[in-house]
Image 1 (tube, helix red, strand yellow):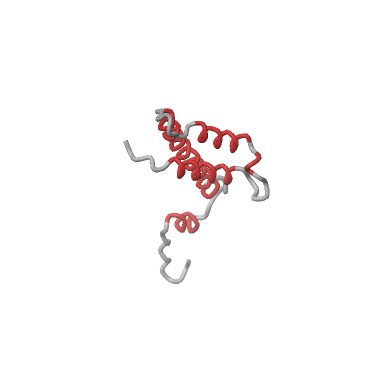
Image 2 (cartoon, rainbow, N blue to C red):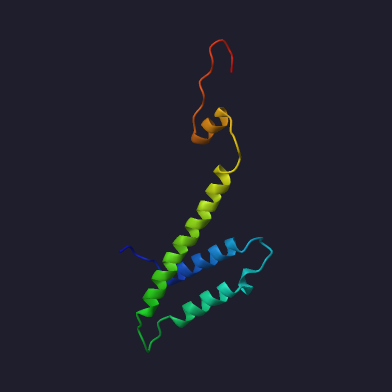
Length: 110
């Protein structure tokens, strides 16, 4: 199993994805139920001096998994927005998307 990193890093990543998914920058994401739930869950599962529980490790694994899902969905949406739904494209535009140039016609045509 790959290393998960620190729980604080997972929490910060989740809050960043929540902020990015909340929409316009002026809208406060800290007033949402998702924000309150994340903080309450991490506070409830932290390790204290009286106990060492496995639930904290489980929460950390679930948080890292959910963070991966949120990032992947955001990247998918960005790719979908960039490459989908523009209709028919010219051959020059398609070649430019993949990093190629079309050959020049002899005699100066094109």
